[in-house]
Amino acid sequence: MEALAVYREEKVKGQEWEEESQLERREVSRPKPHPLLVAMGDITAERYVLMVAKRIRSSELDEALLVMPFSDVTEFVPLLCHWLENGWETELACRCLLFLLRVHHHQIVTSPLLLPVMDSLRHHTRHSVESLRDLYGFNLAGLRSVRDGVETTGTPLFADISSRLQKIQKKKRLKTVQ
Image (tube, rainbow, N blue to C red; front, side, top):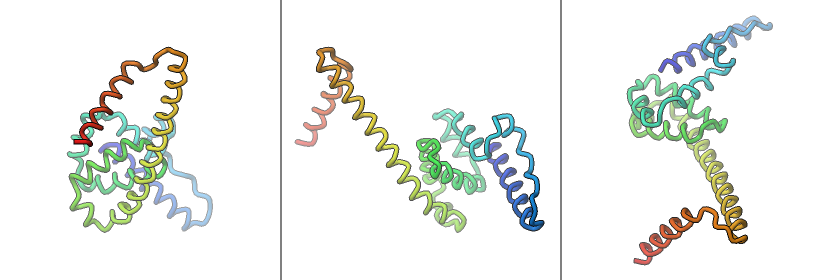
């Protein structure tokens, strides 16, 4: 919630700077970023919230999202959309989004501010998850190719895992037959 406060502050500064530069029609100096953002390596507020969310342990993430008030949820959901648009930590963003949807479904669906964001999230989530699935499939195929190449020489690679995988696949086939 503190990271969202920093994000909110930076967002307000940015909007004020844009309004001021449009009114004066000349180059207005950008406002100084928050000291925390400068200390983290001059990162954006969106990246800062992402870094803070990444530091939360997986077991504590649900609790942290559960205690978040709905006013913060309305700011956090567009951030999740931004993360998914840029391909930043897709797994974390999807996990947060799904949990927030489970907890605040009625409020999110009825909120006029979040409806366009949810439509955008639907598209970006699908695209991000499909690209990750393709990447994992490609990597798995590469690992299987390496394994097959090594095993043709007579040296079993991943022998224990291969036998376990074959047993699991055999059990699945037996279940589908029954």
